[in-house]
Each structure stands twice: as C-alpha cells, then as structure tokens.
Length: 228
Image 1 (cartoon, rainbow, N blue to C red):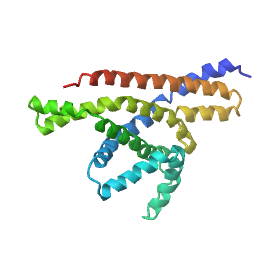
Image 2: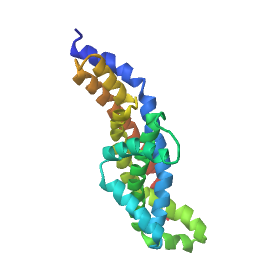
Image 3: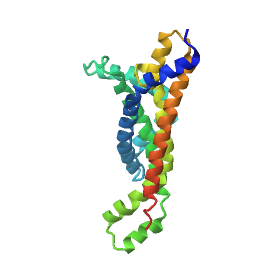
Image 4: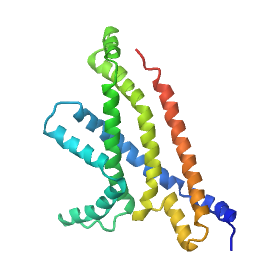
C-alpha cells in the first residue's frame, strides 16, 4: 500500500498533464463571455425596449440560479431541444455543453460588472476628453472604454478566479480536466488515498489562481494610466 505522501507526489505530475485542458475550459468561456457580456451591457445601458427586458431576464436567471443546475439543464436539455429539429447531439463532446452553460452564466456576471463600472465613470473625465479635442468616437475608445475596464477589472478578476475554481464541477458531465483526472485516480484506487489526490489537485488550482491574479494585477496597473 502506498503511503499518503507517495499518492500526493505521484498525483501531481498526472494531474499537471491536464492543466492545458483546464486552461482551455477557462479561456474559451472567458473570451466569448467578454464579447457577449459587453453586448449585454450595451443593451442594458440603452433604451428600455423588448430587447432590454429579454436580456434583463436572461441576466437575472443566470445570476440567480446555481451554476451546477444550469450545467445539468444544458447537458440534458440541449440534446432534447435539438432533437425537435431532427438533430442528434448526444454524442457531442461534454466540453461543448460545459462551454455553453458556463458562457451563459459568466457573461451575465461580466455584463453586470461592466455596467456597474460604466455607470461609475466620473462624467468630468469624459468632458475632459471633449475639451482636449476628442470626437465622440475618439472619446468613447480613448476615455470611456479604458475607464470602464479599469473600474471593472477588480470585479472581473474575482469573477475569473471564481470561474477557474468553478470549472472543477465540469467532471460531473464527463469533462476530463484536472479535477476529472483526480476523480479517475480516486476511482482507480477505490477511494484509497483520495485526500492526497485532492490535495494535489488543490495545489494545482491554487497555482493557476495565482497566475490569473497576477495577470489581472498587471492589466490593472496598465489601465491605471488612463486618466484624462
């Protein structure tokens, strides 16, 4: 029988091989959510029309329900929806369903972070942009956007860290990332030494979280220069 520390040491490299998978399932939803979240933010800061209320309902639903429930709804519900149109997607990779569910959830939170940041901009900063000769478009891209991002970055950093940690639930639908591999190792040894395998997974997630935090802190230092 292996001792605990041997489980820990042997699990680390085995789990580390799946770091690229975890990064993939962090990066793809992030990029899509930033685009979708920006569009939602634009709608939510505009006129109150049908689209505004539809988008508001979308945001409220995904912010007000558990992410795991949303994941199960997408994983089990999307194939049934597609079957109504004669399409069978049951054999599609589980990662696709995770990305869809996570993107819907994450974009809702991103949109609110951006909306709060936009509404928190000191209007004097925008007026200062006009005073130095910026056109409306120039002021938007050189003043409004950078200031919005700068204000939103601390919240976006926290959301990104939550997304990384939350990705650990992807294994429940068959995604084999760091946590998915950890679960396989635990199952292989019938639960023996599971605490050491989980500790190894925790070390890897802590490392990834530290990297994400470092990247966002660097970005925040960059955007601090955007003061008119």
